[in-house]
Image (cartoon, rainbow, N blue to C red; front, side, top):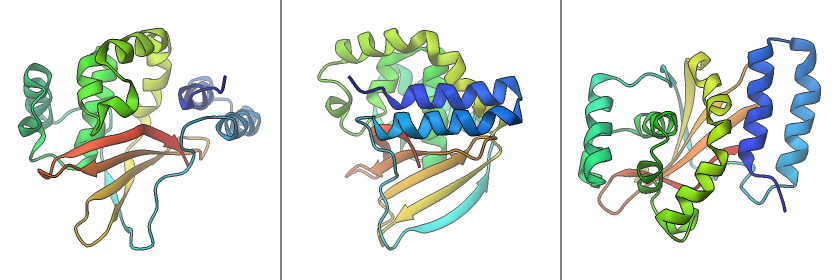
Length: 193
């Protein structure tokens, strides 16, 4: 069985937590090898007409508007709660749902949840087996202060929110607008570039 991208992210996080620059190259090599063996995307969905914008952001802290939207979405799972949010904000809600171990909210943040798992119960079971790794996965987000947003097409309906770890490894969140104009995650939600 091939290893999920989460394992790659955990290895990258270990570099950041340890602060050992000399360990960066072996860890990055291990991550690349695991990505080559993985079933998930290892590069973002890219089209010729992507537009790139760099944005300063604190990925691990919700703004008051994001917090209100998150709390509303947690309760209702209604896309209306996400209507005014940009892709970076949706990525931050994903991070918050992981922090909260709110599997139902994580599942609902996907455009097609059944692509992630056939049922919410199956998704919860899979995520609970990974929950011990969540803190390690989440640690790097405290240090991310810039993201690069790649948006595609004239209608700007697909986007990748790219971020870079201290060891220069890059990852992307993959989002697409629903027919109602709400940004939601494609599957897989995150991949290594």
